[in-house]
Image (cartoon, rainbow, N blue to C red; front, side):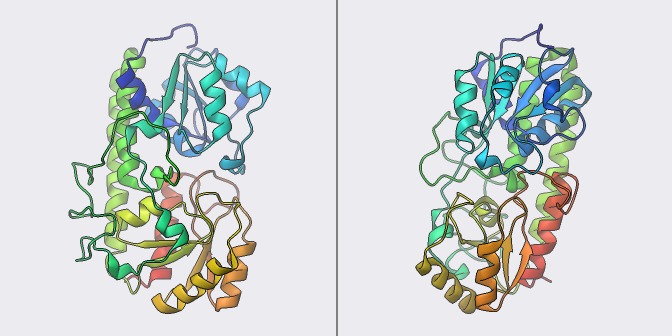
Length: 349
């Protein structure tokens, strides 16, 4: 649909931002198919953005991911071919701050609809989880704990989707320490989906009714996923878990858990000796049984820490891409696998 571009207001652009997906499944996963088709051509930065675009756009969109299956999205370098594909597309969907080369390429491109998903929700700082330990009893959730982040309601969040985020809806550069992994919180991801749906309706009004219907179905599934996590993690032995890198801060905050990351927001960074010792002490003090690693980065550090501390290892997938080793074929299957892994590790009943 490259020849039929629509002008989108700033508010709508913010809404479409919610989208970026990375590894497509239904509409198009072939990067050679980007642009100049008879559909609404969307270039998405990586899988979570592409999944939204696909689910909402359905048969009316052609989605291409800049990040290929099995590629660690933080490491992506944009090729000349991908830069050219951006120019031929109707929209670019990305999450600013996660992939610097994507931010630069989209910023320099002439694609008219540039959509930053981060403008549809707030990115909060979860620095404490990546570098310093706080006992799970230092925060509350709906089970009677007060969250260290200072918000609460039935899910430890406010608004019709379960939270009230300061600064929501404003364009912003991601400040140091802000966590971009909003898709791992089903509530935030649903908020992004709603914005994307509205943006698609306005960008391609001929198919607005389908976009609205698809968005409602997707949001309903995300709300059901939120309820599964809420119920499934309510009665647990511990709320502390150790991960390779700090990807699960939003998820932890949503369900009153405490993430302790070996590395920070960068999955390739190496922990200090002091950090490793601290994690060993945390594991003993809080009854941690498992060190989680992920499929797209090396598991060496996680397995070394687990061996030294006498702990098990398991996979907690940040859902940044899907490979043959993934525990599912799409976002929902991977998130349910994550829930099962957390329930086992935290002693949930």
